[in-house]
Image (cartoon, rainbow, N blue to C red; front, side):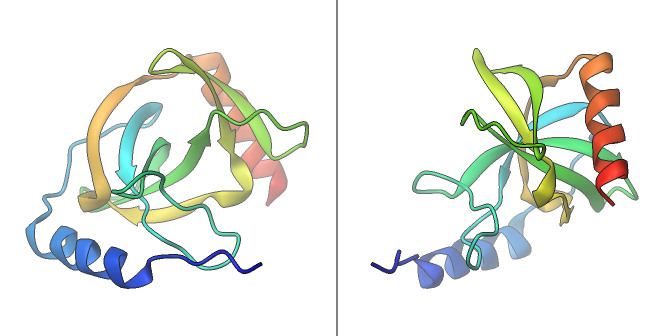
Length: 130
């Protein structure tokens, strides 16, 4: 059975983020809730009615653009899920196969910052994957 996604609903929210969103001040190692939206196929979506999920900031390029990796609480044994510590009191994992560039208007609020050792391991794993 085909999983139907609400692309039209997300498109309206995305237009609002584009029009009214503000660039955020952020830093590498920070975890933010982010409007990832409804995406195609197996690209990582946001969750809930607002299509949001926590992300880890890997690198900033400007005030408007940064490189992120989505986080999940799903435990999977594969080389593309890296432990990222606790987020909102739950064990989180970086989905390194889903690294992407985003506009910082998508960032909603800062949740915290991950341990430097875990961050360095995540960055190294992303680099090795490429």
